[in-house]
Length: 601
Image (cartoon, rainbow, N blue to C red; front, top):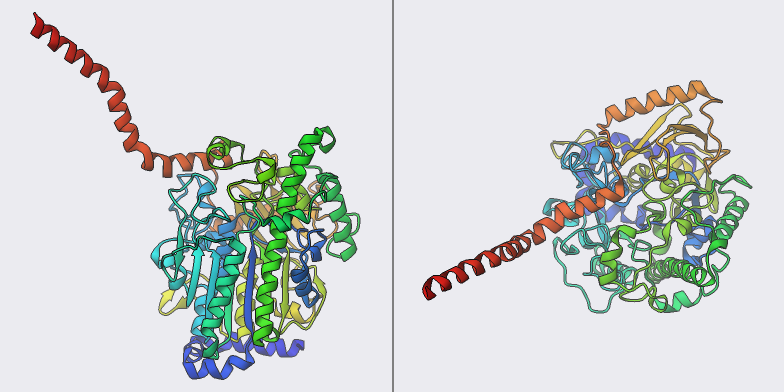
């Protein structure tokens, strides 16, 4: 697509206004424009590292995602939030987390923050989803998989622009037994189909089921003649990491060399592909264990964890292939734009705090790992390799936590097999989709209600010319989640990570030369260091960022919230009854004995 045409197209979208949205919503307008407008498939992986995809330097077999990458643009400097619901909320609304209600993940949110402006842990009424706008603009819309942006009736997909939906409303569930909790922080797993409690099948594997439902939705709406928007929110590779045995068997022995060797191999491949500078410096995180110090039995067990992780990623790619095959069989493939990303970096928690609960609810025996009833946590050492060559992982503001693989491929992408190195952000997805669909962006009101303005930038220029930039070198882009903070400005990044991964100090890095964040430039560039701190402070004030309580620790907060929000409400009546029984029984016995003695006397 020519740049001039892109500019004309974008201008049309900006100038048409709300009246054009209403016109496009009419059946005749939708049918007339269907042939001219692309379909959209948005694929959101869960907890994948920057180099987990083959096209980004990984060894995991992802042929279908790699093929999409060859047909499109890979984004080497794309950023998300460091946990699931904040990213998914920004993807759906094009608005920063602190303005759409997801300033923090509910499970890690301090009690004093919950319910404060920007910290509702659910989408607020003052944001509109991309599905709502596309639906009004003549698209049929579908979502399957992980939702995680609000379980209230007003926030379920059927009220947020989706014609058809089958979703899990929480942070995750078991991938073989969908109604089984992966942690004890809620009474149940919330599943919904078209706004009502869902009935789940007995035979289930999450990635397979989500693609089955997506294909079912596409078939159901095919006769409408409308283009479609299909959002697939995979649970893979969220804990518990689980995969079909056939995929696990393919990786037997593949990771016997350990995490350090894997981290180095992925760094080399990503450099060879041009996604990072060759020989990018890397840090060795304090959370990474010494592979050589492990016993042979420990090495074999740890290697199996990564084998299962790789198998789950490949199983997801396999399901992407099934969806692609369906679109080819229906003739829709060539008219479809595909977007693939991960919602955050790889899971680096060790889940030791949950060990007692896991002991009674899951097996961690070697021979069962990956299968039903078993629980795999990749752990911080393997997660460091998944994020290679970047630093930190999920929950933290280092590049390993917030730099995600992004692929945009298909119709309207004229720059095939190219890499874009410029700074991009998850809020950019919504304006890009709207521009491709020729649906005007909303202003500061929608249907008479005030709404937050979109903060993202359209990526259309990049899809035609990967050397284009969508942000200026002097334009600040702020970020905060659970007290971990960052500000981007051109190639520079100001960042603060709290313990145990960080030290709570501001640092400055040049991401173009040093994406691994190894060389702190705060003393080399003192003026920029000071100016960017001021930029961050201004951004935080404008977005209502709340300071974290003294002594805040995200792991401890999860345990506190679990106890306060679930265990006490669920079990306090039983506890009161038990207390009454334990304290009252002796008193009752004393009374009975005294009465008997009185009668005997």
